[in-house]
Image 1: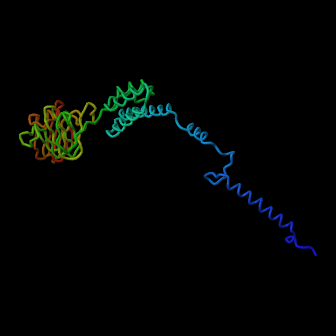
Image 2: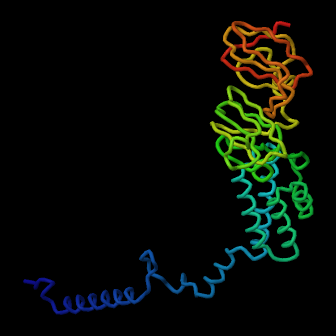
Image 3: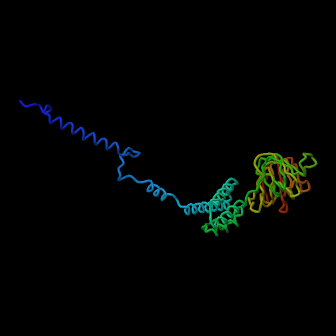
Length: 312
């Protein structure tokens, strides 16, 4: 009878040899370095530090490329400033932001063009679009539609609530408030004494006041704002209107008007300062009224809630 194979001596010699070979292979694998994802790193896929550093440098922008990006940002920001100015939508906040961006880029830029980019930032800060255009083109800025257009006139306003120093805080001129004015006064000082009130009034509907250069102060109570009337003011002329103060030939057409029975007061005006000597004629009607508003009149004011309609 033959012995089982596991009882033969040479079988166990083979087993010992196989165990030794497998153990030796495992130790070699353990000694090889692993990458971050657990894969064994072999000499073929190992890159030395100098090679990795060189590849990283190749991916980074050069100083020349950085400089070009600073210049492009500045030129694009100026273009946005011009476009918003022409459209009349450049807010104070957006203007301030444009100045900050241009100054920041000018600080980063080096070389011969640094001075020019600094001038570009200064022109925008001073809101001198024409000077800025010249610098922009000298720097190689691309032409665009709005570059050849004039900026829209900026709206000059006064808050409906507050007391303001004329010539310092408030520009003299003819102002209009759409609605919401409760009280206004032109003053010769700020003591609060009655004799310093040059003229005053109560708003009802659209209100118009001329602030003179000789005035010291202007006081207003209400909601909304006063807007300076300039040469661009050109509303549609009305032939039917209610409470408010109107410019003849601008807000309303001259002609003969008849009111319903609700009008409490009306006046034809030669100006809008609020001075009594500017009242050409006035009335306190009891029932309906008919008034001829002449083309030579400067203004017309009415209150009481009634409506005027042109009859001829």
